[in-house]
Length: 156
Image (cartoon, rainbow, N blue to C red; front, side, top):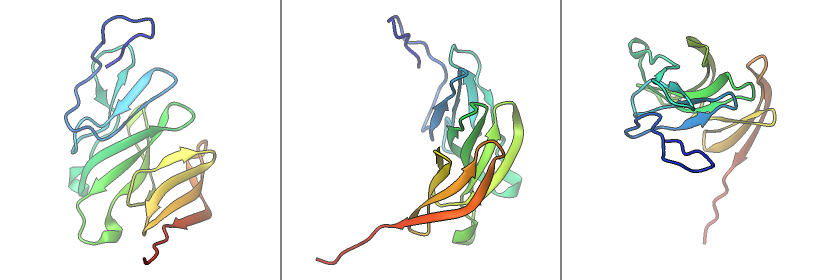
């Protein structure tokens, strides 16, 4: 829902049942995952009909697209692809999509969580560690520089 800053009634922009994240672009597009097993949808922040921004490839074992997060250009976004897996290392993938083409999909890396972009890096969870990996949002490429921050446990 959206409420104008000057007041007034709430405007419904879309229906979500068990949503899995969303992001609002500076250009007025909202992307969101409305259900646990859906495509990512896009809708104008002024309302309208939500349309697919991605397409889940069920034939390839994908089960959902979730946790979208816009990149600085406001047209591309990160999202998590969940898959049916037989081994742990086949799990979730971090991909880039585009609000201009629902078929655009660039696989970046495997991770155990969603990823967010911050100051030239992707932040995500892998192998029990918070990972910071270089990422160029213009070329949509990951770098080799990786930093891992492992949680320490201490015995009492």
